[in-house]
Image (cartoon, rainbow, N blue to C red):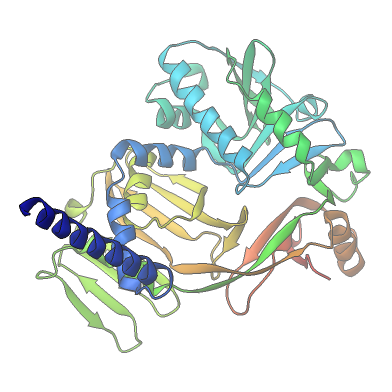
Length: 432
């Protein structure tokens, strides 16, 4: 009799748990409150270990602005950052450098090489869009210093060539046409190259192979074919969810925290040691009241880890610029991407800036916004048509670069062709 009562109690408890789980499922998926999701995400983000944050930071550091697989002078396949192969290439690069630098399994040399050297080769191309100090880059990935012969060398591209035995990394300075060449045992890029080639959706070609040598830089890649490629129309909006999340992380002690609403509607939150200002236009500024209060930062990775731990909410991020002044003084500029394409916020060419002075974090500023997918559509205008458009309107102006870019603000939008010329930047619509 006693045993049957225990079974009845167990059944009642189990039934209550089932009903509760159904209720919670309904609340999350159909009737959730923002604060509940904020708490859930906050718990998840805070549970990330330093090792996991470091892995994310290194991935961001090694994420290029543009990635291609060059098959010949006439065919290069674009890989967007939302494609699986993009992340696989970046992670394989990071893990391979870290592992083999520690083991000292590499050969290194400095050579003068022109871009033409790579055009006929089967190589992966990582174009970062800014200059990176070679020694700092390797130290960030593997905590290893490289010899003096490369001291001060900067690169803006990495060409990856792989055969059955070796992987060769060319850290290339396109302005000086020189490269640090590192030869390693095989990383395993070839299966990824085969996977990229099978898709052949975004096909580019070197401009000199298309006869654009008089109006375009011969060393730029021009999109010539888009096959079944669809890009989402997106809409950006102010994010109260992210604001709440960041405030919870930065100011967990509510007793010491004060909130003030300024006359212009901006909100200022402070605990006397640090201040977060949330502006009406979607911008934010986080800073310490005195330099001694700033978080200790020994590297770019440390700065990125703090940013990820505090501000990161799942976006696709890349570094768009790093500025070094003195030892322990630097700025890191970050860009957010949607559908693998940069999203430019406001009037800035970046979405977040991290500033470090004297080895301590001093300020983080940028934009807080949500990106919503409205619908998708196939782009009907290729890169050559975009070039023809600006030729018709502005004549034969010299083209230095062509890329896709979202420009946030206002109504929903599709990406534009951003064409850098000697006369300035020209934007051409992708949808006609």
